[in-house]
Length: 127
Image 1 (tube, one colour):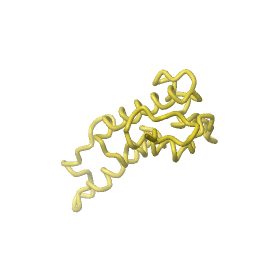
Image 2 (cartoon, rainbow, N blue to C red):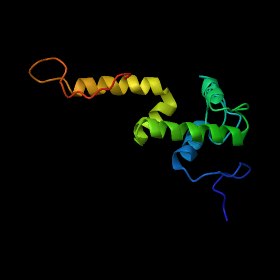
Image 3 (spheres, helix red, strand yellow):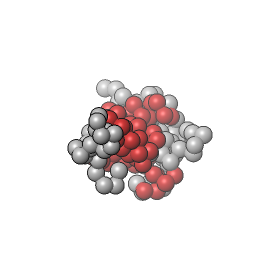
Image 4 (cartoon, one colour):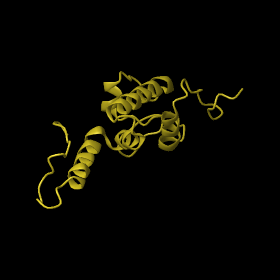
């Protein structure tokens, strides 16, 4: 039975799809990969994100995958299971996606005649 991992690489510990595609796309399954921005390991965790999720060694596949999968799960809860926003936040950061999403909501919900904000804009405080 195949583990789903490339030869010589650790077997995945979960069947959660986005983390596997994130590994492939971000690091090409290289646990020592380092991006120009400083993201490290299979899941390409930034140092602050690794620290936030208790990853002491970002090049350790088990730690890196556990941290990255937990981060994806938290993003999924935060962005209401919208995979487009989850993956954008994983790549660009939660704050960048929130700023962009809030701008998009405000632009789409301007009142057509008043030129101002629609009373049904629905943008919550903190966005």
